[in-house]
Image (cartoon, rainbow, N blue to C red; front, side):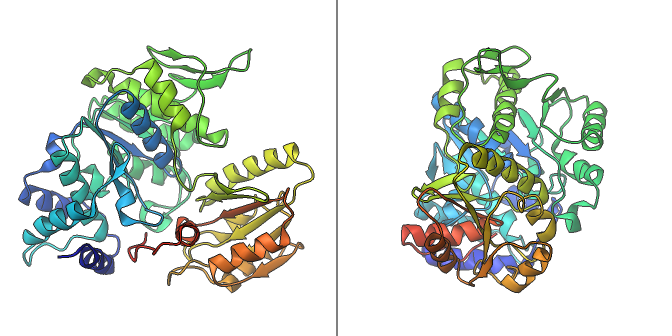
Length: 432
């Protein structure tokens, strides 16, 4: 089976949609030898920040000389972005071979979803690549996510709790925290990032029930500037000074803190944290689509924010940018999925942006420009619209001066369309 055929097969699995539960995943993995059972795992969940935290932890481990598997979702352009060893995407021939083995054990009684099949593929690749440690980002929720078949990770982290995917996870932060807290395992340390008191209380209760050591940002660990302006990490056993974060935005300090705490918590599993590797990993980490600068004059940034909590973070960054660059206008290129909270997303951004260009990713579940415009009934600034994302960027550039800022946000799918166009390459038909 060719790589193109494999991708077409995976694309077809998306018809099964999202199916929460672990029974199918356990059966599938059992039929290929339970590759996940041989892995030492760091498990990272949360509403926002989990991908950044996972990538930072993986970068630090790589700088320490470890062989590191990193599993994240979604991809932006190429399906293989999801599965990496030491930063290198899984080769196409490995995707072909491993998917053939997985398909061979399905029979008529097993119908995995796209995410279940992809997660099993990652476990096989990591096991057969003899990684020292695998860093796994939760796909959706936690309790019934396919990655949660891992029974004894070295440590886990839950970065933030916010309102997203309510149709699957519940309609309050407490309910969502309960689902995401499902990755907490008995006696396994859990790192908890910045979140509201109700969500933190739920996670603390789960940790107490499972006798899991609880590490909370701002209590058991922190990353803050000292009196001299240096960033200093203070954990249970480590103090690391002169920290620099390669990812833009002050909110990434929280993610960096969670990443370092996760590694510190994992030391009991025989993975010592190296200070120099921590500094180098955080300084050099790269994570596409998170306040990523892709051009200058005018400056163009891509950000995958797609829910109200992430929009709040983006608004703080743009507000700081506006203060530092008072002559710059900020033009927002905005596209979202139909099932997201359009008004909740755009409201915190309106005070800082100068005009908006509406667009939509090339997906059936993308909100139309007309649906997005309905959330702008209280906005009096300029609104332009064009269906194709590349046309939207061109339009924004035509209206920007060299010192302005163009921010493209609202959907990782939108960012994928634009990055593929910028690279001049095809976009994987598998999305989401």
